[in-house]
Length: 243
Image 1: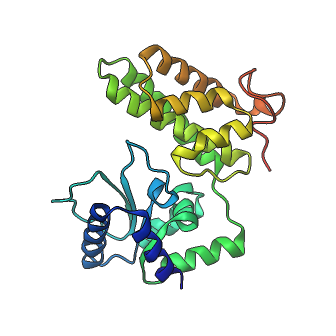
Image 2: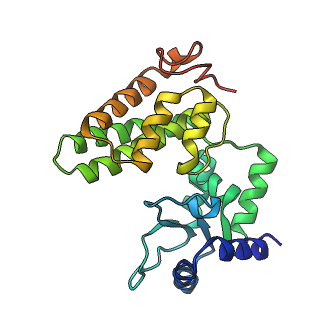
Image 3: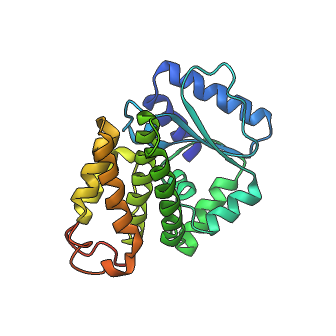
C-alpha cells in the first residue's frame, strides 16, 4: 500500500526532468541488487530551494551518476550498516522512513518502520551534537580561505546540523532544511533561525557567516548550561531540555 502511494506522490512532487533522473537512479540501484530505494529530502516535503539536490537513500551499492543532468545526492549503505546506523540513532534514516517516498523495498524499510513503532526508537541528540561540532570545525577552516561560495555551503551545512541537534534534543523531529528556521523560532532560537535563513536564501558576507558560526559555537560548547532561560541570552525558552 505505501509503495504504491509513495510512487504516486513522488511523481506528483517532481518535474518531468526530475522524474527521469529518479527513474534512472532507481533502475541502476535495483540492477546492482539494492534492497531498497527511497526519494528523500526537500523534494518530498515540497520545500525545494535553489540549492536543493535530488536526494536518495539506497540500501545497497551506490549507483553510478553518469549521464545524470541534475544535482544528485545518494546516501548508500548495505543492510548491516543500515541497521547499525538506525539503532545508533541516525536521524537521516528515520527522516527518510517518516517522510520519504519509498520507490523499491524488499522488506527492509517496512521492517525498520515496524521496529521504530514497536520500540519507540528516537534519533540520538548526542550523535547529532558530535556531528554539529565536527561541522563547525570544518566551517571555521573553510571560512579562512578565499572561496566564499564554498564557505557559505559549509556554514549552511554546519548550522543546519546544529538546528537539527537542538530540535532532537528538545523532542522535536526536524523537518527539511527549508523548514528548520520556522521550527527554531517556535523553539525559541530566533537568532539561529535568522542566520540559517540567510545562508539558505541570501548571500551573507564573511562577517555575517563568522557571526553565525560564533552563535553555533556558543550553542554547542556547553549545552548542559542551556536548560533554562534561553541560551546565554541567544534564545527564548527552554532550548536544551530533554524530554
